[in-house]
Length: 193
Image 1 (cartoon, rainbow, N blue to C red):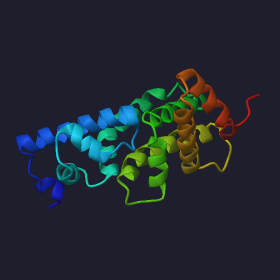
Image 2 (image 1 turned 60 degrees about the horizontal axis):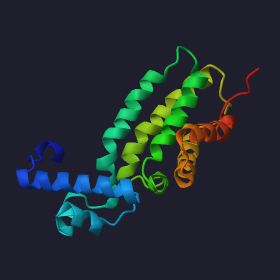
Image 3 (image 1 turned 180 degrees about the horizontal axis):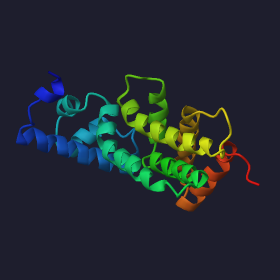
């Protein structure tokens, strides 16, 4: 039997503490970025550091708990990007949306890059569906001869993560970010005639 199936539900006070930590972390990440002080988060949540670390042993565990739902929604909404056989436009839009989403909190792209080569990282778990979705769009575009040969989904995901860092760092509004992604990802696509 797995530990997930044997885990007991949280007591009401433990659930309140966990919810308070998540709320304080979201507020801190919104205002200070993902490198916000964990001690400050515990203080704002009205719990001790031990309570925070019992619920979230690492910063990455806390980050993943906050990101999971929005990442799941991003992947689910990707299904709607199948522009009736227009795989070039579908891939381009996915690359923009992924870039825009990864810049949602200051320093989030840095956390994603740090997790890329660390298979034990909890952030790896939320990145895998993003890579798989990127792979799907890329394979469809390749089958329709609209992307250059030899480009991997991993390379594209890395490029988009770096782009999201730039968009985050430069404070791009959406229109500027869209243009930046279009310029930076142009080499992925076959030239149009």
